[in-house]
Length: 281
Ligand code: AMP
Ligand code: MG
Image: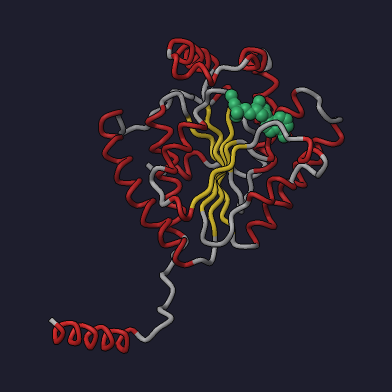
């Protein structure tokens, strides 16, 4: 199954999250066989990221959004564990600081965008500025509604600068969110994750879904597509996202750079060094 084409949102298409099955788990997958596939993708991802780092020509930006407890942290952990930390960065975006608020909303985002050769993951992003900001009327409608065009222009700038952008909406339903809140409550090691606002924000579920539908519909473009990933099952979420990452990176046709030295000459140097070494023994 080609998950990239299955879950990619066509530009300007109508998005109705209520009609998308968050429980979907593929046609030929189950939890056990998935572990084998996931391990295979993880190895591929590692090789491709190494190639991107070596090539040093372009970058990959992975944007994760979703309701609270949708699994953004879990996915970061999954993707990042397959990569060499040297060429990889993660940025989590929280309520803007006083310093960040003194700038335009894209300032902190642009700063975090990947340099050539790097993979960067955004755990939340500039989309919060058309989600939480819209739901809680933190700015006027005229201000947030302009942002869809601004975001498209910004992402287009990044794309023109060699950044490949993939955006994932981790789709869980309301029952699954409550089940995950309960798991947090039952596990003392996860109590730190619980916040007062979890239950407050849950009351705005429908407003958030509407805001997500608009953002995904207006900002899914050919150069920065949105994917809606059924995420009630964590293993399926991991498999779908890993496959899309691997397929995208493979399609880039990356090449190791040509050596900066003449390998034949260096080989001769190696052999004479080896002979010296042997003589001295
Ligand atoms: P968490 O991801 O659970 O650590 O929570 C981060 C919090 O920061 C969430 O409640 C977000 O809605 C909030 N947040 C992130 N970006 C913004 C933003 N631009 N404006 C307001 N709140 C934000
Ligand atoms: Mg949270």
